Structure formats: C-alpha cells, structure tokens
Image (cartoon, rainbow, N blue to C red; front, side):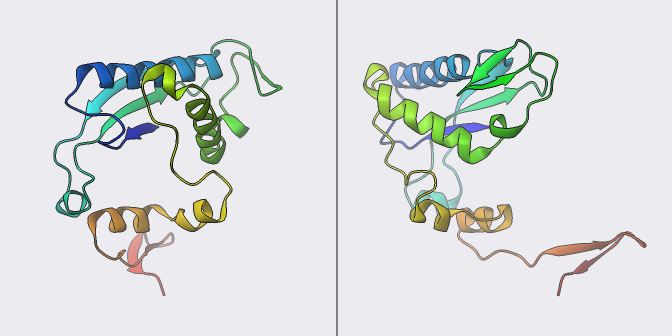
Length: 164
C-alpha cells in the first residue's frame, strides 16, 4: 500500500512535516490493525513525470507499507474477529474499506499531526466511483496519455495477441 500526501498537505522538504505524516500513518495502522506485522518506509518523490509536473503533482511525500499476509496476533477490527495464523482477507484487504477507515481517522485526528482533513471524495460517493479505473487507465492518465489496448494471452499457445 502507499499513502500519499500532496505538496500542499505535507511539504516534502520539511523534516518536521514528513515526520508527523509518517507518525500519523504508523500510529493509525498499528492502532486500527493491531494484529498485523508491517514495514513502513517514507519517501519523497523526485520531480515526477512531465505530465505530473505540469499538473503540479511532482515531489509528493508518501509512505510505502508492506503487510505480512498472515495475521500475527488475534485482533478485532470493527467488530469482526481475525485469528492469528490466518491469512489477511475480507475487509482487511478491501481497498475501499482501507481508504474509508483511513479517511475517517484523518478527519478525526488530522490536527493532532498538523495535517489537513481529507479533501478527496468520500468512499462510495458518486464522485469517488467515477474516479475509479483499471490500472492501465490510471497509469495512462498519470502519464498524460491514453491507455494502450489490452493484451490477451492464448493459454493453449502462450502467444500474446491484441484483444478485440
């Protein structure tokens, strides 16, 4: 997972702001998911792609999070019990649920960390649903181009061809 902050939310050149943003992510995830083992790394982007720079989106601060696929300790998340030794599943891996929980926490506690409240469309809203896309469309939009045609693989021959 990756949690990203726009330059107007967290100045990537300010060590205090980046430390507080990292602390917010770390404390939020360990409190919300106490039975999971995680590795977190904070990073500031380079300038980004030309299209991102034109949109003023280069140089964001973000936190990469790697989560063990097996639950380390029994835990209860929003009333649902998850047992140690079981794999992550259900709402623990649902991207919309992860985003909703983090947005709620950010809106409740942003001032404590010197962060702004969430300004993106709420999960489940019409605007949020319209903004969802498949990975190819997302990356093409980020690069400022149109998505490439999907590729198909014929399993019987393992030859790649263009989907029709």
